[in-house]
Image 1: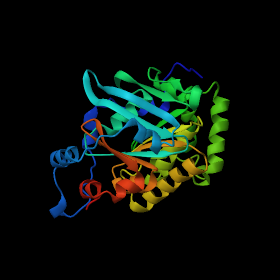
Image 2: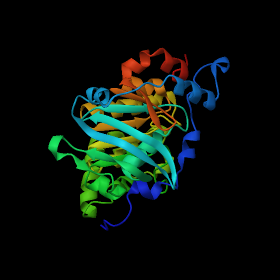
Image 3: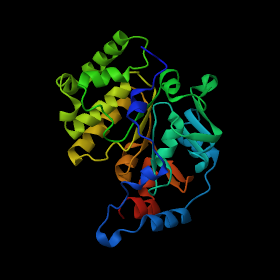
Length: 304
């Protein structure tokens, strides 16, 4: 296969800017409790805390597998993220929450190479084996650094079969046979997809499409999964299914997961670590349980 081409994720991805985050939101309460995005942002900025690197290291277990240091990034010449730090340990999960437009997806884009990095470092690995991946292309981050990106909804190739979609997940492999072998391993893990392997992706249910999007990212057997809004557009019964799949990938397949999730309560219930992002900066950090119990987080992002 031609390794100079784009990944399946890149081929599906349209030009994105920070305005992408204007969709969705945290308005989970009654009509009386809904406030504007601007007011949420103002109030969230007011509760921001000073967060030390020691605190981030402690949450990651003192040995971060993926770390971000003093990151400044954005789109074109516009800086969205300002001096941002992140730590997540191997086999941990981290969920980014915050007001719409805070820069949550921009963080995922920076890790995978979808936007402009003005300064800072992104490193992946254990101990002395940690590698600086800041300047790598998206293809190299997937193939060499084991970082995979799972886009928001509607990233499958609708006119291709389920099987062909999975093959596209191995687009960067040395041969089509390698991609097909990897796809078969995914089919063994998810019989539901195997039963639909010859069906066009456009006929799948919403939950099946999301499973296919996740599964396609697994073909390259990544170590880090960047998951952008896994629950978006799904019925409640499929949301639970998707989070069960992600739980298995973290705790059985031992993947490291960094997630942006519009359903803040669901994301924090799932994640080991939670970060609150406001205006491109880190405002709060704690365990998922800590942030669920934080009255300010509850008031602004959990519907009360």
